[in-house]
Image (cartoon, rainbow, N blue to C red; front, side):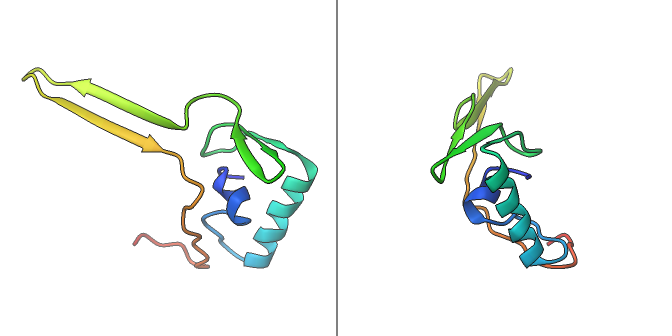
Length: 93
């Protein structure tokens, strides 16, 4: 289970071999548990088809100031809508 979007989509964002096997694997995980500690996301709980993060914010905001008086800012938001990649051979795009 790479991230919460896997549950929302019913597929991980990268499927390396067989789409049906990947979908079945996700279904088995969701049927057997409701709390997940994924490799590429924050821990989350699935309750009645809704995803709830166990702790932490919905997004991460990083702010850094530079010596010249300017500042840099970055916000990263976790989305469940990441596109599914079902290419059998994974390659950089």
